[in-house]
Amino acid sequence: MAQQGKVVAVTGASGYVGAKLLERLEQEPGLRKLVAFDVKAPPLPIHNVANYRKNVSEPINDDLNDQEATTLVHLAFNPRRGATRREIIEIRDENLNTLRSVMASCARARVTHLVYLSSHLVYGAHGDNPLPISEGEPMRPSPEDSYANNKSFCELALEEFSRAQEEVKVTVLRSCPVIGPSADNVATRSFFRKWFKGVSDGNPAMQFVYDDDLARVMSIIIQREIPGTFNVAGDGVVFYREMADIIDSKMINLPSFLAYPLNKLCWELRLQRSTTASDIDLVRWPILMSTGKLRKATGYRFWHTALESLTAFANSAYIYRDPSPF
Image (cartoon, rainbow, N blue to C red; front, side):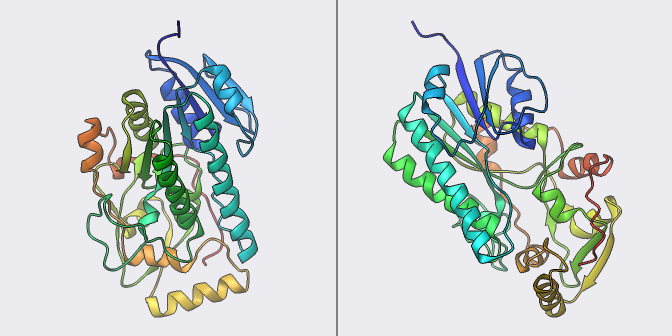
């Protein structure tokens, strides 16, 4: 007779979100075992976990079968944007091929629930975005944001997989930036710098989710096997200029007609590799998400507001201090 309780596998388990999720799942009594896949060693010891030091672009169905995995959370993702067209294509193909390999392994193993962490950036920063934007709106990632485009390509691949593998439930979580005291990821390196680049005609409201809140949401979805696509964001907002004050950054405000060409020039001269036109778009046109669908499906009430999440990060020692004003 099969043992009772879910066995949850996590790819990218040693990353920021992966480590937080394993820490949360370790506390859930209803789970039988955890399975961690990553090329790196786990940052913290976790009880009752089977660790696999491997790249999940290779098949893992034998490992999933050996551990009797029922659920897989796919967090393995290369977030780099790429500086050249060749690099952008290579990173896109890497992320898509890795996801396809994981999906194929899930189909061949006993996995019945696949969870994928996407991004609010798949909506794209556009002047005609609804405020707030709901999951029913189309994905329109900004052309210059390769990270957002890679996430949208992965979502499309998951849609195809879901249609072909009806016995596997698929959950996609479109999360706003994830932060907390130990945050050190793409979002923190993109936004939180010594010099804060703004535009004079933009002061958008920003959403954040505390890392522990995201882990709890994912735990609920895993345990209840809730399928579908959901926006994830904490309560409240923080305005862009307010954010600069909180993290003690110096604001450089330019009119948009100067910000775009100056940013492009600095990119072409390799003076900076952190900001694209899509980042300026985000300052002008916010992506504010509705989370009503998530709340209805899970009943979860967030423990931390956007302001509390940002403050927790600002009070830590993890703020990335790029000396370049561009």
